[in-house]
Amino acid sequence: MLVDTHVHLNSKKYRDNLEEVIQRALDNDVETMIVVGYDKETNRLAIELAEKYPFIYATVGFHPTDARYIKVEDYELLVKQLKHKRVVGIGECGLDFYWDKEFIDEQIEVFKRQIELSIQYNKPIIIHMREASEATYNVLSEYKNLKGVMHCYSGSPEMAKFFLDLGLHISLGGPVTFLNGHKPKKVAEMVPLDRLLIETDAPYLSPHPFRGKTNEPARVKLVAEEIARIKKLSYKEIAKQTASNAYKLFNIKEKV
Image (cartoon, rainbow, N blue to C red; front, side, top):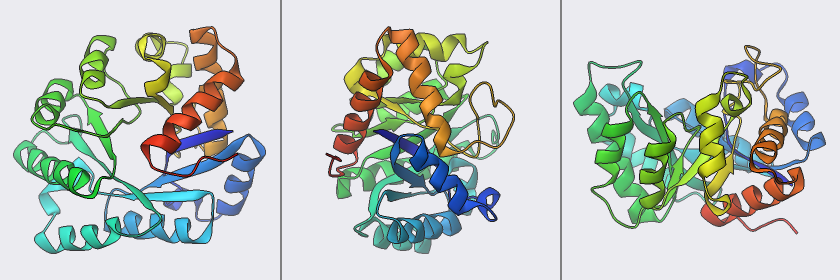
């Protein structure tokens, strides 16, 4: 019933318990997981997981904090990976001015290159944005026919409207459950149901009451439950609609 649209099962954090983590997700209504890459190694591992499990799909891309290291041959490999039948998106990519304020020009260049690949190969783009709302919008607004998602959206409700106007989806994760998560709760309230996605970003950003602990995809259920409470809808309605949105965006055949 649930789709975790952004999880890093390719993380070293799951090296010793991956099978248990996957089984707990399946036992908690998660029927599909999208494993997101962000560098050469995690891109490769995402594809390997997608090849092994029928309910896992992969995305491949370059994280903004790695932008200064990306070379021409890296894009050549990325293009090959984008053609893989289990790869459903590009990213995560974007802008991050929290961890890296020094290589902003390189971040923008690498971000633009991946947006152009997203359009060329008709794959949705998974956008990472941290303390860079205006700059991210400025880059994205240069393009038409965008298809993608603002992953684990941390911006304001006001900025969310601008990203929605560009045709993008908004995805919410663990922070919407935080007791002090006033901003994501307001975003959850205002985003139209047909443009909303849910995720864990596991192993990061574990939802309440597990905040600060290693996250896992089973906990996307807590995200769905909190959004249902905020929107005054049933858990089943949120689960069904966000799953349908994910299947449509990532061009995955919907589970019956």
